Length: 105
Image 1: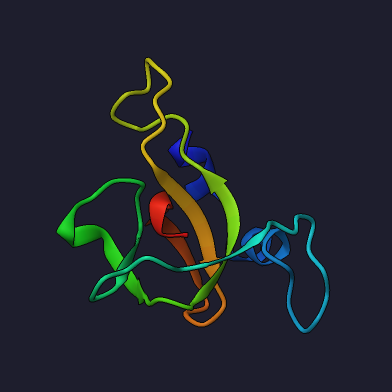
Image 2: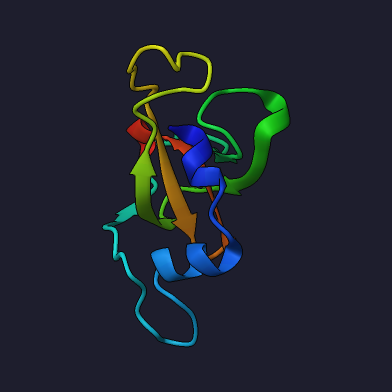
């Protein structure tokens, strides 16, 4: 569920996405490259859904992200499982994690 992802502390997140100062983390998700953008950017979002207010960063063609997970169940549809098409990623360039539209990674 989405809220389970958001409850991670900064320390837990750093461990999950590769640690710090060269130390490996608990989980090494696959690295993907942003691709297929015709113009503009891929929004990094605080939630796995589109809302102009939840954009927290911008990714461009060629940017690499590490996959952390995906949203199989949305906060709004907690009574049913429905994949929203968003993937939770970590961007080393932005030094933050967030949700992106899965078709562009």
